[in-house]
Length: 122
Image 1 (cartoon, rainbow, N blue to C red):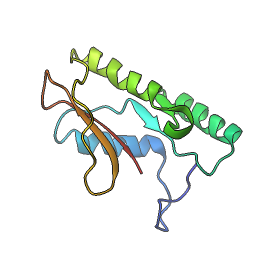
Image 2 (image 1 turned 90 degrees about the vertical axis):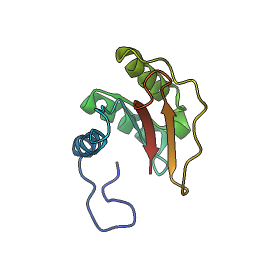
Image 3 (image 1 turned 90 degrees about the horizontal axis):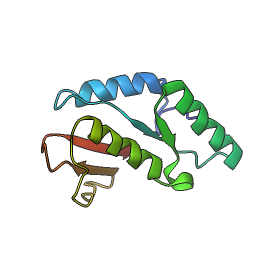
Image 4 (image 1 turned 135 degrees about the vertical axis):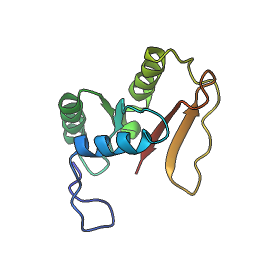
């Protein structure tokens, strides 16, 4: 599990705190809830990566997956389940291309244009 924020000397805050901050900032635009975590386990062995993913999921109570090792299936399902909970249609548009080289994918619901789901990994 990452201990430092990339390219800084700052310690990585606990994921629960990062989620709270992210939800708070996103709620400025639209009430938001994090429904999944994309884990970057590239520097871990297969067994270590599986333990980190499983432990993170158990601790946070939300879907966690390594997109490279495990694919996006479970995370996409969590997003679609949240859309269904909110009474939104499944996103119908293809993901928009990320701007400025960040790894970010945004789907916009056709039923409520202001409702967005964004996956960001960094």
